[in-house]
Length: 149
Image (cartoon, rainbow, N blue to C red; front, top):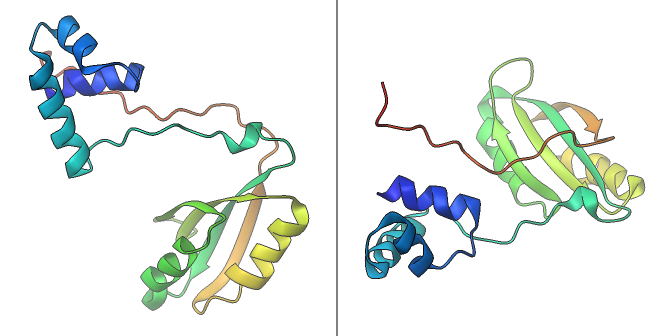
């Protein structure tokens, strides 16, 4: 039942619990209790989503970082504290950390890269990929149908 409620909220995060209950043929209080439990546990978050790329004069970029292996988590934590950073992942492969930046302009991007990221102890190399166009963006996780084999 939780997955069904999540599917409804993915379609429209503003849909009322009463509407979801009617469509699932259960009580509104049951939907509310389950949704609140999912929210409190952190399994779901309901927020308005801003698309920075659609805001005039915003520059976005992905940055790949090679970091000292012994300082990997420290580097990721330091980067996570920067307000311009939207997400940070520690990954496997050629680079150790990937992150996304949202900056006011190219000058701001350069300042963040050269004065905030490159100076973090443990950062060995950065490669920056400025976004020219976002071809796809989605915030949905497709929930598998657990009733089929």
